[in-house]
Image 1 (cartoon, rainbow, N blue to C red):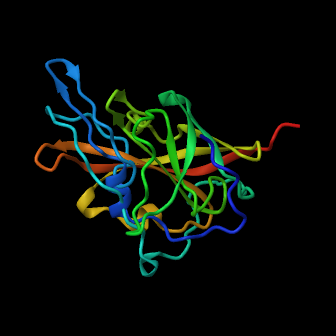
Image 2 (cartoon, rainbow, N blue to C red):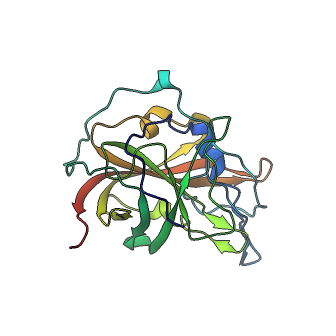
Image 3 (tube, rainbow, N blue to C red):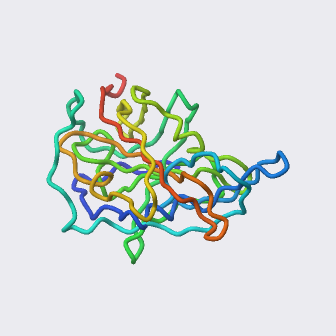
Length: 243
């Protein structure tokens, strides 16, 4: 499903690292006897694409991530890369990442009462979620997009997110017919118990994007991945709606 155009005046609290870390990683199965076993990941704390598990693992059932406290938000910092001018606010409708063959629709996500980001449906392996009360992709600031790494029926949309390289492009179609193209600056893995809220969610002075999913080794005891994978990108160019 595609979200309705974003409201003209956004800016709610950002999801916290705890919420985002758990949401997206419901759990990823491992290779057992040559057969990949997958479990439905949740969107939240597990929004980073997971690195391939090193050992056999059972499905996990993690929870969502909480919002970054207002007191922890750093002042906007200009991007070090050449960034295209900001675009007017408009909800994202389609995510395309050619290098890893991603072509998926968006659904809008909100925070639950604990400040954790609600997860996208776990029965749809080709769907990404956008924190709709935050920055829209293309606007000045940091927009947050999350996706599952797998579902009960197999690999999901962000399974290969960790394989992106600097310079790869991310195209986001928007409700107003325009397209925002982001260039990847870095792909980082962070331990869930040391997730850098400010680095990931901190407000940017220019249009930036964060793609998040699960990563790292699979902890069979906790039934969860040890890390989150985060893709950092900046707005490289934009294309207005046709005609």
